[in-house]
Amino acid sequence: MLNKITTFFKETKIVKGFVYFIIGMVSYPGLVIFNKLKISGMENLQNLPKRNVLFVSNHQTYFAEVITFIHIFCAVSWRKKNKLGTPYYLLWPFTKVKYVAAEETMKSNWLSKLFSLGGAIAVKRTWRTEGKEVRKGLDPSDTRNINTALEKNWVITFPQGTTKPFAPGRKGTAHIIKNNHPIVIPVVINGFWRAFTKKGLTYKKVGTPLTIRFKAPLEIDYTGSVEQILDQVMDAIEQSKDYMLKGKHHAMKLVENKA
Image: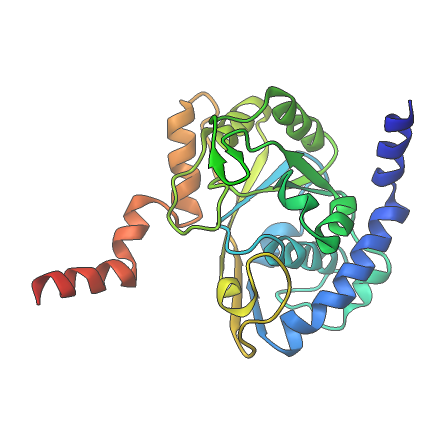
C-alpha cells in the first residue's frame, strides 16, 4: 500500500513539475548560455498524441540529453519552434514524459536521485553488476513497466544502452516497438560528450555546439522481425554499421593503414 501511495505521489504533475523546474533552471545556462544549443525538427513534435510515442536516440552522457529533451518537450507545448528562448515554459511544464535509465545510474548521486522523480523507468541492466557482465536481456518486469508507461506518456529510450558510439543496439527496444506499435521518433544528438562530464552536468568545455535533430516518425512494419525493426532504428539514429563506416574516425584509420 505504501509503495502504491509513493508511486502515485511521484507521478503527480505537481511533483514532476517541481522537479522539472529545479533541474531545468539549473541546466538551462549550460545549454543556452555557456554552450550553443541548436535544435532542428521540432515541427515533428507539434501534433503528436500525448501517449504511445517512443523517442529513440543515440547516447553520450547519463543525464544531459534527457534533461535537454525535457526542455524541448516543454518548449514545444508552449508552441516554440527550434529554440528554447526564455524558459518560462518551466512554470507549467509538459510532464507526460518517461525515460529509461539503468537502476544503478539513478542511485549514483543527488542529481540522479532527484531526477528519478521526474519520470525515470529504472531498469535492471542484468548484464551489469558493479561493472561486471553477468547476463544479457531486460528483466521481464522492466519491459512491462515500459509498456505501461507508453500507455499514458512519451517515453525516451536509448537502444544502445551505453554512451559508447556505434555500440550495437539491443533487441529490447525492437520488442517494445513490435508489441506496442508506438509512433517512433528518431533523435540524433551530438556535442554533449564534449561539453559535459558523463555522469553529471559539470562542464568539460564551454562554447561547445550542442545539436539535437528530431527526425520524422519512422514508417515501421510492425509485422517485421525484431532484427529488421532494430536495424531500421539503428540506421535512423545514425548508429548503424553503415554510418560507422562513413565516420571521420574510420576514414582516418584507412589513411593511417595506407601510410
